[in-house]
Amino acid sequence: MSCGCKTSGDSGHSCGTKLNGCDSVDTCGNSYKLSVFDWLANVKSPGTKPENDFVEVRFKNDRKCFFRNVNNLPLHAGNIITVESSPGHDVGVVSLTGELVKIQMKKKRFPESEALKIYRLANQKDIETWQEARKKEPAVQMEARRIAAALRLDMKISDVEYQGDGSKVTFYYTADNRVDFRQLIKEFASAFRAKIDMKQIGYRQEAAKVGGIGSCGRELCCSSWLTDFRSVNTSAARYQQLSISPQKLAGQCGKLKCCLNFELDSYLDALGDFPASNATLDTEKGRAHCIKIDVFKRKMWFAYSDNSFGWYDLDSREVKKLIADNKKGIKAPPLENLMAPPTVEVKSVDLIQENNMDRFEKKRNNRKPANKNRNGNGGNTDTAEREPHQNRDRKPDNRNNGNGEPRPQQRREPKPQQPREQKPAQGGIPQNSEGRPPQNRNKKLFKKKPNKPDSPSNE
Image (cartoon, rainbow, N blue to C red; front, side):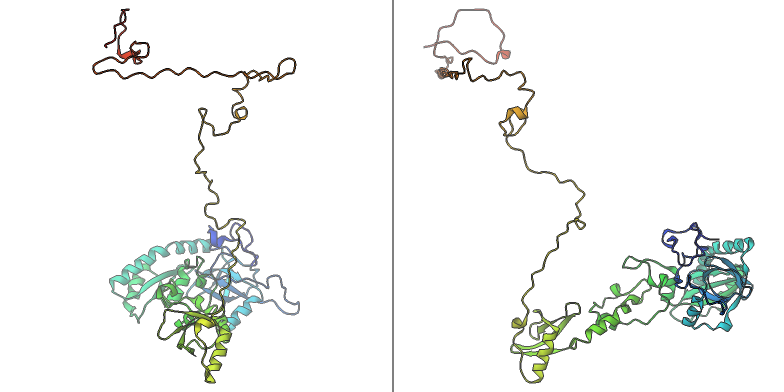
């Protein structure tokens, strides 16, 4: 029984159901937390050596255990099996088989004598009982928190796990101090009608069981691949020149992030070639103290004791020479003279424009058009190209006569200018040059009168 990819027997296959969410996530051999890549899956043991009879079985979340295959069942990763438990039996999923199981047992220091037995492949009744018990876990967790709050116990129940046959319930809780839960167990036993088992875990184990997304945008390391929790202190942040800020250095568990130890060894190796972080220089202008170290650029920033705002970056090899000269009694020149000339940064050209946020937007032309003519076009004088439909009915301009001689150009005479209207005298009617009153252009305001002789002008 497996997920839809039908490759639960191949432990080297990754169907990706862990990220996308598989409907049968409990039975998929590649969709659980802290999965182990079986790099010995295709390696067969020699014929003279018997095959390994130990199998790694996983249960809810990251809980795993090793069992002995006493009946020599043909097991593969993803098979649902029924195993020995106390009391009753439990149901789990095979997560690893083959020679790699012994290596995992040696890594986790699991003695072979403590390995329990595998009963059989789970039948339909075992699977139904197991699934019904798993469905009751969220409601049981909420009820357990309510009972603990009523008893005023300073504890937090973070997870609940039912055994495969439903006869035992395990409660995982976190607490800062020791908790007296004797009365709590009695309340749980009467409420849930099962054997109660209480297990205290740390805050990091709680984050590993619950899971989540870290500040880096990826799944938490403790819930995906990290199996051991090494101690982390603030000195790891100081070696990496990080600001001691609890909000930035703390993870979802409230403790320092485990990833602070990932690159710590590389930083320690690189800092071995640097002078001490509290190194001082005796210069001609006074004593200078080290303020900051850049491991990647191999630079150290110094500032004078009387002026801590002016920083000067020096190469680490140059600082070693200056310290050696100070031991001989030679003062170093001023820091302004020791600074290296600024390097010209070469700007990279983004040909694909991946970093351009508006690369998919259409660029609009905000320029205003030139002076338009009556037809709405610009200042182009080529009317044949702009208005071809207006030039169809025009006659060709025959510049030549029939004999091939050029036709004389006709000169247009200017029109005679009409005299301007004279201003009327006071109380008179305006007159033109002929002595007649000008015609009223706004004819709509006056009614048409019958023909009468012209009225004499007022002289």
